[in-house]
Image (cartoon, rainbow, N blue to C red; front, side):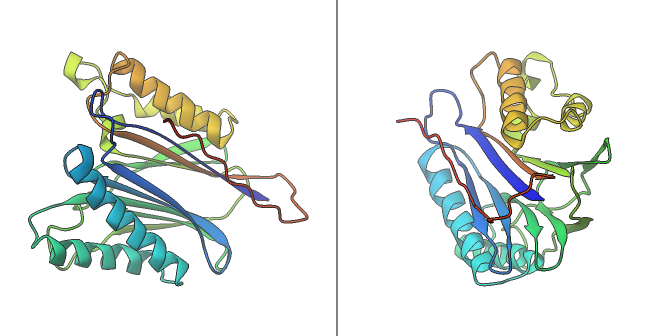
Length: 232
């Protein structure tokens, strides 16, 4: 099997700098994690905060910390750093080869979508954002590391796309996409474009779509690939 990861993101229209940060991290015991942080506000101040939190989460994962512990530490750090006056949302999607499972960790008002066996569901248990309380627990979900399983996470700019003109992003439509066999990159691009269309191409908030997909591709040499496209 092979784990595919893809991230598509865009900043708020006419702001330029996205307040959302994403890190893709190789796990020390094998596997990969995607850290998604949505900082409070927009622009450079929000970017600095979200980037700081995402980097800390990435370092903890690289040091071998478990996902639940990572979420608790970044909450404690933000709470102490900003005296509980600033919040951020955090989502962590992991393929943990050491334990043979997929892990979804959320302290976010946005859901994570899971597709497996031709069916998709929404993980949306109510949780608080990080930074607002000292003792805060994430929502943790463990799933089988099985061929065909897809995880998709967002920031709230995607979920709220179209609301300014009375429209709404359909999670049912996105769930159907997850079962079509598209690659991780194809899924991320399709959902981001869907959200942008709802915003008439001028997003009113920062947007991130992150996808982790387990495929049946054989890679006997264990070749790892990372690619990126960055506007300048």
